[in-house]
Length: 279
Image (cartoon, rainbow, N blue to C red; front, side, top):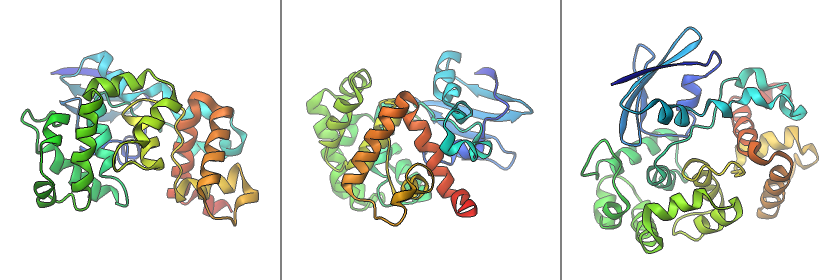
């Protein structure tokens, strides 16, 4: 077991691990978070201004996962949200190493709350022949719809094996790793062509499975914050597919690799009621 310490005075443990970025993590009564990263058990907790980590991961792998360089602290140059940033200092975009776990976790995420997603992801993880590693694409592809329904995946039990089978045809895990090196536009189009993947899921998978920093998932939470900050002239309009594409394109053009971080802050501004309080 390795022990590492990281200077991260603003890192928000609870917010980052409860924010729907990763789903096999839990907090114990003492405030220590326990979870799995790339098949390794990890414990992480705060000691004053540092993060303490115990894991069988290497220091480099731990640093990559925590992604401290993606902190919202770096967005002070964005005037539309600068007023709100003190509440979101230390929020990061975690960078899971395993694209398979991230992709299938988000396939469980449509039309569901975080607690339910965690339950479904735990059920999927239980299919693994080498726990705590997540099951392989091959294992998921060979699991029947009936069995996935039995373990609680509901209507997703039909599309999850189909997505796994399609991934096998495209090259399995290596295909996903190759998409990490592709342009955002190409990666997004590829994800969108998978069974069960719509526009928002494609962007979520692009961020967490493929580490595509220009993704901008748009849902009602982000739309609410967006129309209070960047686009107030649209405040009374419904979110349409046209507006979704237009705004995401504009945000990528303006913020480049910071696009996903701006989206993350907007999401939490809406979720925590910040925009309502300031409206």
